[in-house]
View 1: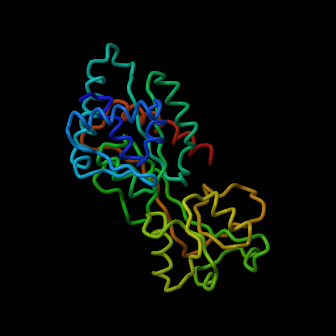
View 2: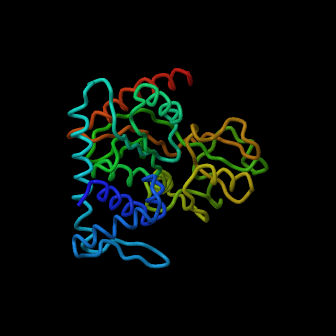
View 3: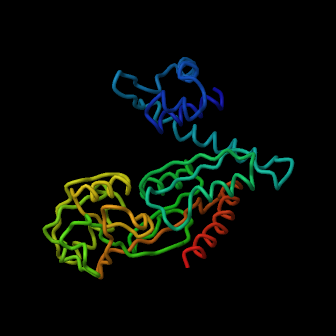
Length: 299
């Protein structure tokens, strides 16, 4: 049983795809499949059920997965502990972000971190806040940038609030409300909406606001990214509630309007509160500098 095999197990479990796992591990699919098969022969048990349509963990695979993650985490910590130069970091830092992060420029953050720690491999994953927070708790991610409705905070992780902003309603440029200066949620009754998928933290922000206002709304489109939302709005198919940071200034075909009683989102940076790895602490230090610079540029 080898450490590289553990990494392959973790990546296949995360992606449910041998092809994507191989891409993330920078190996060929045949090499990854060969190592998984070798591990299965050693254990005398199948770890994955493969079909032409999907890949899923067996019961044995489910049992092995947390131990595989623990082995990889221990290896990373060991690498940190014996580094010849305490200032020279190596290994991998794993970052999760929501699609609508606005409190810091992610490309600038990663560039600054890479410049400070060139030997560290950076892995980036996008997802919704609940899923990313769960991965931080499990140790699958080192740091995550989250967005939650006001009054809700990340659970089971270390965190710091970094920004808070009101949503704005985005409507087609030719919409009947496009010339309004301010609106209330009740003014949006009867409209067709595009929003994040039901059950996600991004969706909860608007669902709770409309429920509190006693306004029913029709969410006909559920998508994962703000870019697709804005495209549907520009096409005249729906309206949306989004935070200002993800609405490009001067975007053609849409108008953004303040909503007096609309939802408000708080962004957080989250990390392992028990024993953050050195690469995580280093990333958080760079993050603090970049967040301050981003905030200053907005003033």
